Amino acid sequence: MAGRMFRVGLLPGLLACAIAAGLGCAPRHAPVPTPAADLIAVRTLAPGMVFDMRYAGPDNFTGAAVPGYDAPECWLSPPAAEALAAVQRDLGARELGLVVWDCYRPQRAVSAFMRWAADPDRTGRQRWYPNIAKSALVPEGYIAERSGHSRASTVDVGLVRRAADGHSDLLDMGTAFDFFDPRAHTAAQGLSSEQRANRALLVESMRARGFVNFDKEWWHYTLRDEPWPETYLDVPVRAALSPD
Image (cartoon, rainbow, N blue to C red; front, side, top):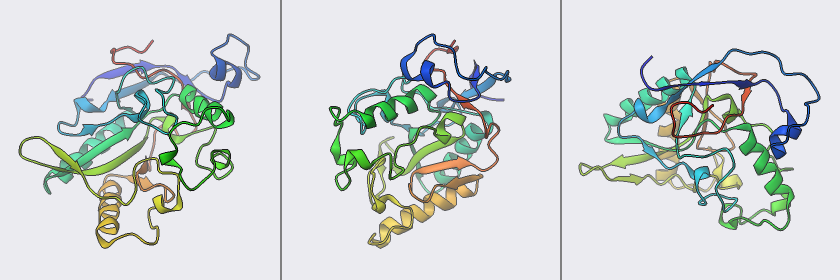
């Protein structure tokens, strides 16, 4: 398999006390032994792909870098990484490409989102949820205690137009990434013809390589035949070859 490989251990379930606080308390259920996972650093497979890894810095809905993102890297399972690189190649024929905002997400990051959502004193950046109260983000399903991203075959992506000088411009998708609002639904009403066409092109391009869209978020895609559908990982994303 091309690309850099990362040997990481798998987290088979939510070891809630240890994940949430980094404490050495015993889980309620003993971990089930699982095989190691070989994650791919996608940038080694996809020249020209744009990486804007939002949770590794403060430009996200929490207003701060998120625990678990120690480097702005996109890691995925081998089949998801290969499929995403194939989408990038396909789009290149149209002088287009992908921008990636999130890939594998450690479970500790998901738990950090839940803590943020439950803390009324941490307001984050409300431009991501201008029409909904922060207290409603979890009940409305915008933030959840488990994420498909932690299975390493889900990505958040958009489309860019690639210029000869290497510059890339984001296509108009109708909303920003991580915009918590019905307008972010893939088939939302009230979009312009250009916005609808761009979303449809992204859906078609990703579907051609085996990805399925989550219809509540135009940017969110999961590999249909993901290799670890019941397994959630919790190792931090780092720049080093070995995350251990």
